[in-house]
Amino acid sequence: MNAAEYWYNLETGVVEEGMVSPGYDRAGPFATREEAARAPEIIEQRSKQWAAEDAADDDWGGAKQ
Image (cartoon, rainbow, N blue to C red):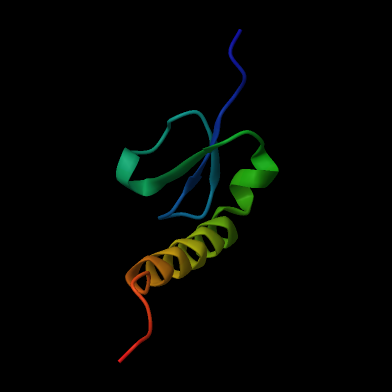
């Protein structure tokens, strides 16, 4: 039997077990209900990390002018 997957509904803020809502309203999957409940925080952290990585990639060539 497959383990349950949890999704965070971006529209309602509700954690859902399985793919209940349309894909454009979901974030996930997450392994636990608790992790899914933290989705907004996790998304914000990952966005900041990706932005920092992109900024570092943009500056790979040397000194700024």
